[in-house]
Amino acid sequence: MTCTEPMTYTPAGSPCNCVWPIQVELRLEVALYTFFPLVSELAKEISSSILLDHGQVRIMGADSVTQQQLEKTTVLINLVPRELKFGESFPLSVYKKFWHKEIPIKSSLFGDYEVLYVHYPGLPPSPPSSPGISISGSMPYSGNQSNGQIIKPLGVKIPKQAKHGAIARITIAVVVLSSFSTLVLCAVIILLLKHKLHGPLSKDCHLHPLAKPSGSKG
Image (cartoon, rainbow, N blue to C red; front, side, top):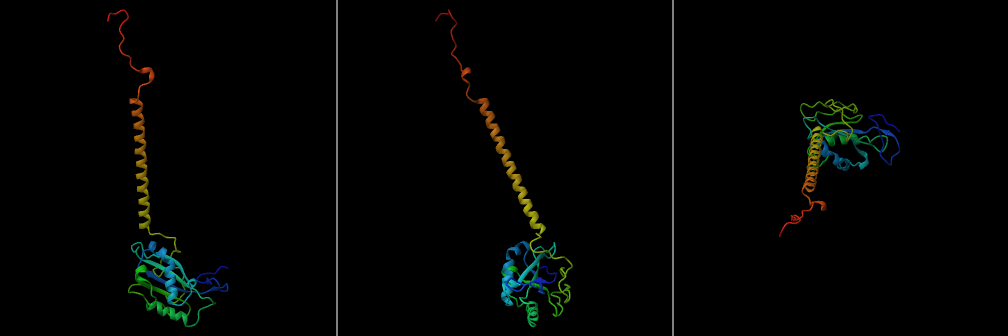
């Protein structure tokens, strides 16, 4: 079964349906490459705070905020109902918990977090999370971040700075290994040449003591 965005499929163990998730976008004070290993931990912390099963919290995508802010990551989260929809009071409760920052997310792992929006049919518009940030209204998530950038599916983008650093380290290692191999090869060739030029004389070339001419006296 294929669900058209923003609809998504129900969690494992539930009847197979396309349902409307609560869509949350957060900004974490952690670099994208640092966030990747912590995806499951973030889902666990959110699910325990709003009394959902771990499988009902899906991390849908993540991206660096901007090329100038590689130390911050924008994360898109879907909260998925087990039935066709959430209970009437649940979406508003989740909305308030996020905007009042009542979701305890470990600052030691993720730093401070900022809420960019909480979307679900019937919820009020998302208020600006900080001055100068324009947050879209109560319409469902359209696939774009609030700053107009397209958020990337989880795991497809690595910051250029980190990627270029890794490539540079690999290049240096290759150059060093190549130079070392060349040096060893040259040393072996020199040793072989020395051995050939200064090695022991052959049996046909050994020296004899000077012989006296025949017929000469003592």
